[in-house]
Image (cartoon, rainbow, N blue to C red; front, side, top):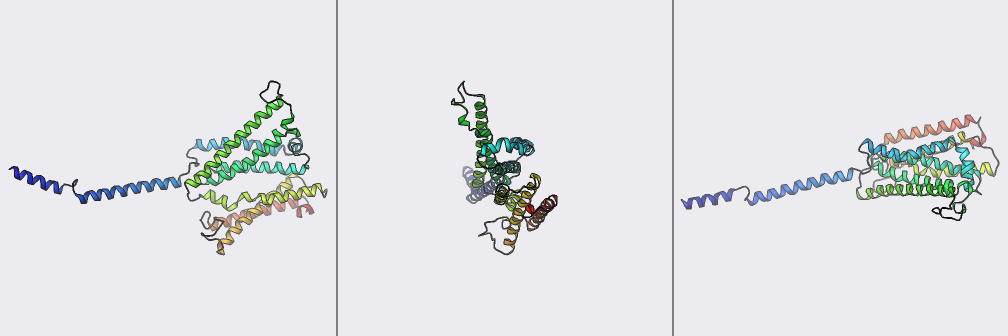
Length: 332
């Protein structure tokens, strides 16, 4: 009887699933496969999910509140454009001519609005990486200009010439204390913008992912190239006014001309991307322009954008020509 029980135990041990070497190897393989699949899933999620994406209404409202001051401030700058140029910007830029103040104040408004829009666009997944990087860059330019023209060299009087006392001294003037508060506030905003910009860059390096549709639009339009069109035009307007003594047709028409030139630049960017891709100049291996080769935007979408930007240019241009009774300055 004892011998029979011993033999039964030996047989059970041999055919036991838990003790079978083959079964153990299979279990090990299954466990490794499951772990690899789980790791792959988490890795894919890490690559596609952006920390910059707005996941709820609170996230989007936080961005809106952050850029709200920039939008409000630039609306006021646009409303009181000439007054601010004469009383704030021009004295701060002396001895440069008034036209330089007009150009700088216009750049400030454009960068402030565009930067705020880009920060709002950063709510949309990986679009946030490009939008936040470019938007914060524009807003940093805005903050630098406004800090100098409004607080450091306010009304043409430099901060360091107000009085000989440091701002924490009881004898320091109220004007100097007020300027100090605003300068320190602007420095803190510049620091926050820099942090956001670096976060976007670090995430792009650590978690590369396919760009979203919004990032494709930004890449296709390339708004950071607009300054190369606006700068020569603003210099040309300054030469017409200062050196040739020609009266400009007015700020509304001048702004319309500038917007039309921005539309021209956008059209040129889009057409360049389209034609280089069609002709085979841009390939996945060698293209500097990744708009179409990486399928950020479809060819049909790119063609629609070309038509829209070209229509904007023609509309602004013909309106400015008709509004000035075919002024030779406008036509030139």
